[in-house]
Length: 556
Image (cartoon, rainbow, N blue to C red; front, side):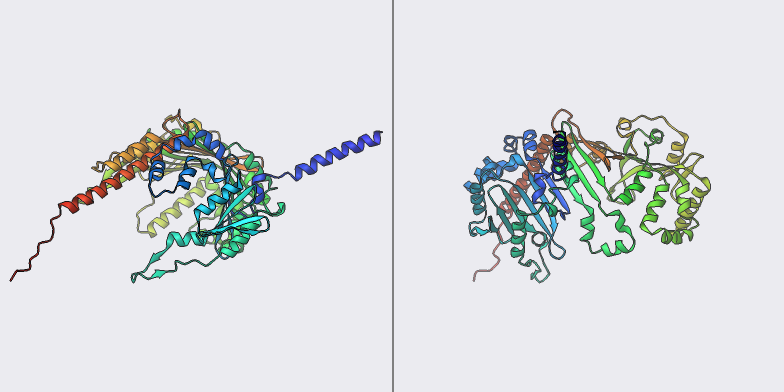
C-alpha cells in the first residue's frame, strides 16, 4: 500500500511537471516562432474603455455611413462589427513573418463566432472571387492581393509586403510611363502560407514560448513582441555584424511591450531579454539610482527635457570587448591622445542631459524674419579620474580646431562635475549649484535611467507664433488641451529581463486616455474636413467671379 501511495504521488508530480512544460498559449498557436513582430489587440478591454457607440458619434463614421456610395452590407458592419462573423471578445493578432526575398508576410488573425457570416463578409469584399477548399481550410483571394483563410473557429488574412509597397510607392516618370508598379504574383505562396498557419506544430509556433506566454498574461489593452534576432537574421547586413561579433547583441534579443489606456495617461511597460552572455555583463555593470542632485543644479525653472542615467563605466569596456572592436577603437582613439581605459576612468557613471528655456525667436538677419528655436543645452557627467578626463577634453579641442573652430563647445569643470553647454554662463551657473525643485524629479528618481519631456511647454511656445491660419490655430489649441508630458524610467532588472516604464500623460486626468484620443482625432478630422470644404467653396466662387473670355474675332 505504501509503495502504491509513493507511486501515486510520483505520478501526480510528473503529470504536473509535464503539463506545465507543455502549457500552450492559445494566441500563439497560429503564429510562426520566426515572426519578427507580433501585436495582440485586446478588443474586449478596448471596447469597454471606448464603446462602439462613442465611435459612432465621430465625424469619420458619420461621413462613411451617410455616403450614398456605401453599400448596405458595409453599413451593417459599421452598425455592428460582429456581423462580420469575427469574435471581437477574443481579440485580434497582427504579425509579420519573413517570406521570399526581402519581403514579409503581413498577417491578421482572430477567432470566429460564425464562419458562415465571415464567408459572406469576404464575398461582399470581392464579389468576383469564389471560395476554394484546401483540406479543412476555406480560401479566397481578395482583389488579387490578400488571401483570406478560415475554418470553423479561426481566420487569417495574409498580404505580402511587396504588394503593400507597390500600392504605396507606385509612381510615374517624366514621360508618364508606369514604373515597376506591378508586383510579382505571390498568390500561390501566400495561399500555402495561409493554410499552413492553421496546422502549425507547437515547436514551430509561439504556442509554447514562455516569454510570449508571459507577455499575454500581463494585464493590457495591447501587447507587442519584437524578435530582434530574427530581424537581423533576415537583414542583408547580418554578415557584417557577424564578422564584427556584433551578433552577440542580437542573439536571443526579444523586446516586449504592454500598453494600457488608463485614466489620464497611456502607460507602456517594456521588458528586454538578451543572451546569457550579454545578460551576465549587463547585470554585473548595471547602474544604480540616478543622481537627482544633478537635476536640482539645472539653473532654470523652465525645463522641457531631461535624461539622467547612472551606470558603471567599466561595463562600456566589457561590452566593447564582447563585440571584438576594442583593438580597432583603441587604434583610432590613440591618435587623438587617449584610449578606452581613459574614457572609462574619466567619468563616475553619473550622466545628465537637459534642454531648458525654449523660445522661438525671430531671425533678424533675414528680411522674412523666420522664427528659430532658442534654448539652453546642458550635458554633464560626474568626474572620475581628472587626468583621463583632461585627455578627452584635449582631444575635443583638437577635433574642434581641425573643424575650423577656436575651441570646443563651452565647458566648465570642478573637482566633482564636468559640464558642456551652448552657453558658458549657463554651464558655470550649473556648477555653482542650485536647489531647484521639479514635479517630475520624484517620478523618475530611484531608477538607473530617468527621462522627462514636457510636451505642453513645447507646444505652448510653438503656439505663440502669430498666424492668420485659423485651422492651424485650432489644431494647436486642441493639442494644448490634450498633451501634457512624458516620463520614463528604466534600467532595472527583474525576472531575467531588463524593464522600463513609460507614461504619456494627458492634460485631462479624469477621463480615460482612449476616449480622449478618440475625441482628439475626431476634432482633428473635423478641422481637416472643414478646411477641404472651404477650399472647394472658394474654388467654386473663384470660377463664378472669373469673367468669361472675350471673343476678339472681328465680324466682317
